Image (cartoon, rainbow, N blue to C red; front, side, top):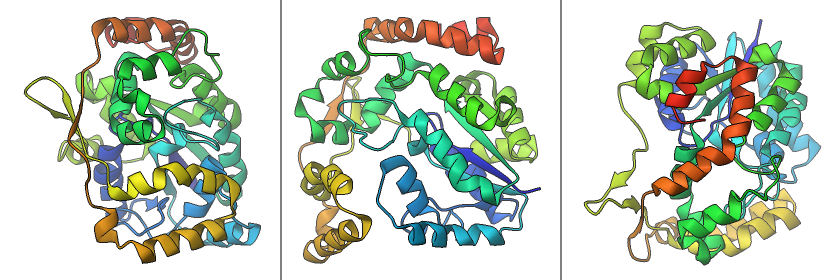
Length: 338
């Protein structure tokens, strides 16, 4: 039986550590097929590419049917019993997404994943890492800071971004990090037994639980999971002496392309978009595009009243999730989901 496991994030739930350490190790040891969802080759990803299909699903890029089907042909030759796609963008990005003004319709990607990949695998399983909203919202703000501010400079103020995107007036369907609505959609499409939830907090406070879950999902030994994940912790924030978090400076390329990228992707087909991109790369060398510009930025830490607001904002939806998945209520209270 051939199984596809799609690990879809969320961001800031140890996704990078899982990708580069555990999944990279399993692929190098020939225990899994690890599909490359990126445009360029990476040493920790396999040689089978699904970049165009993934982009078509999450960003609405206009690839031809020939391009999409031709890319998927390589899936027919997979011999391993487990194949993995892992990308945190799958949980947050969808056509018309932007970072400054969030709407979370990424749950609608579930059906597209099924339609795209079900013909090549006997079963598809979904792995979703979650983290208490009072922690993850500020964590992704730091991660997306340059993109957020590039789209709307007013959101240099975290409070303004928080008020814009997580107000009580926003519908439950559209608010980002409503785990219940998101996960229930994946259960509806793929079946409850094929959806696995990883609590980021277990990695910190209940490692045995976390490692055992991963060992079961990827059909490997718990000791293998532990060795891989404890080897190197990835993507840790840089905390300054004044308590603020250091933000990497944006690149010249980000400044140049930020105002135009979404407009072009939405309004021109993929071949024209790629042609424009090639011209841009030919005119401006990579050494210049990657040059860091501007002053160092720092983001303050989240205030306790803001964190408590987020906990209360998502309390009802988290209670529904706890009930549906039989999570230990006391543990979820300790982890501040409720």
